[in-house]
Image (cartoon, rainbow over all chains, first blue to last red):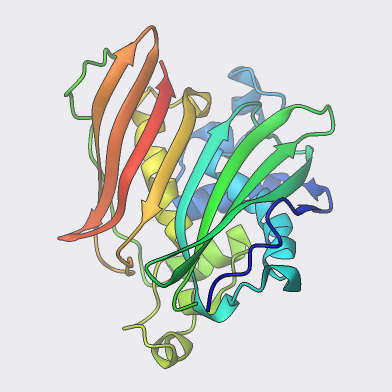
Length: 146
Length: 130
């Protein structure tokens, strides 16, 4: 059965994600980021950050809710039970700090089939309340046996 | 400031995720997929046991690069990875990276993460500003 490509170009916008200091600390601890700029607001300010700063890969945390809204859109016809995360790219710009609110915009860039698998590529652009781009993401989801 | 030359290896990062890691990462990241936390569920869907989150493993690649650049999180500009083999708790992960190109404060590496022979992240490329 060929993959359904009608949803290419569709966009979704997540609710603003409020970044709090405890979430930054628990994420930093879970991934092993011991740098004090991720644990102590004063240490972060000394290094020129506005407040406690998130590690780069924290982009996953604030982008995830918007990606989840996209993934369950029935128009995609993406079989979540057979879904694997195939690839991921991030480009980082403005650092994300405690107190920021981040809004993530998702666009379905590509849907195609290869070797009997469905490939679904999404781009996410996330901005803080000043409109600055914090990170761009490119997510490749693979559905086995379409 | 460290200097970077094409062909040079960045310092390896080694980490062994403990048995409780996937649960802590699930809570911290918001990715609560049961294949990462529920042994019974993981086996039911044909996995050998709970598997690591790919994005946690990617975070180890990110960490290795930030460390190699001197520790400033702003130095990591881009990271692109492909997830291949599944990663498992309680097995050491080794992140390796080699400089592909270095000019005018911009360093590009080719990098991967492996558990023994099992290369869980491959064909990955990072860009640092140093």
